[in-house]
Amino acid sequence: MKTCNNHISYKARILLIFTPFMLAYLISELYRNVNGVIAPALRQSLNIGPEQLGLLSSVFLLALALVQIPVGLLLDRFGSRRVVPSFMIVAALGAWLFTLPSYKAALGGRLLIGLGLGACWAGAYRANVLWWPAERLALANGVLLGLSGLGALMATLPTEMLLQSLRWQTLFHGLATITLLLALLIWLLVPTHPAEHEISGSSLGGLLSVVRHPLFMRIWPMTLMCEGSWLAWQGLWAGGWMREVAGLSGHTTAFYLLGLAAAIVLGQLLISVITDRLIQRGVPLIRLMRIMLIGFVAVQGMIIWLPLPGISLLWIAFGLLTVGPILAYAWLASELPSRLSGRLISLLNMAATLGGFILQYAVGWMIELWPQTNGHYPDAAWRWTLSLMIGLQMLAVARLWRLPHWHTDS
Image: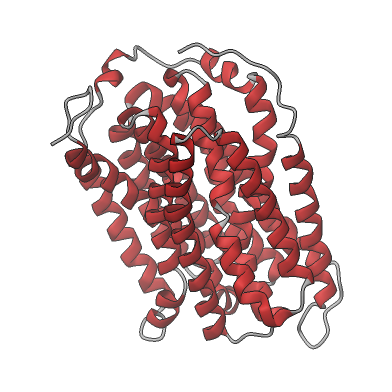
């Protein structure tokens, strides 16, 4: 079997390292998106409106954002194998708390879930940086996100069908158990990378060097707005749009969300392979990222303003193009020193999840500014609110043209 310089074969690396972290990422995706399907049950159980529902869903992303800096420092100090499972125990506790019959308890539980899963994203990306060659990092990240996107897929129609035979509280008790088992799997199975033995500690100085880097200063607004919009759409408001504006039933909405999640999985896998081939032929990654980001933003505008009959194909296009914002991880990781990888990835994650929190909550808040008619908010409330979100993405993507010149150390 082919091996790399760390003396672990590619096949063993996939089995012992990539797969456990991918599964942790997968369950975090399930947790993140499940509220899109159980939203009606949550509103009924907790007697809440759109704004409170938006806060209940988005606090998960706020927790992810808040925990990213300490997670990045801990990952660079102790490694993914020890940090990720330790945090997942907190997520399991939060999943149990989320099921208590109180809005405050549910809010606290959702917060703990976000805090506990905050290391899954960064831990998986950091493991890729250490275990895979730099020229294959975009492919490794794409496959990671594509396969973990199966968690978002499971949070759609399969969850809706499962809830026909069990309560949503029972579902979360099962998720808590699975989370603990995955934490144990990572702790027992994943080896330590040789480079992690060379890390004597972590420092805020390294964190500040990432924050002050001219490329990071240009890229984080895009991550904040574009990946944040993706999180806001998939995690909650795509389902709301389908039910309230497109007039779809709960079952049909779950089916559409399943299609969206499947398109995201396919896009991350297929387009990442195509991107990898183009990179091998000398096409700059930044050029590919710009093209995909333009399409990613444009298709959102078409979803909102084009006639509804063709909207299902637009959701598929949206899912396929979500690979665009994710290319920023591989691009920046190739430009900055690898010793800063944990902090770099965590800072990008913080921007993405903070954007998701702000947008997921702000959309609900702005929609409620319009008066209801027969228990529903007007289509104009949805269209103008989401158009503002698209406009902010356009401004952020525009910053990726005319990038400053830079030099990095290896």
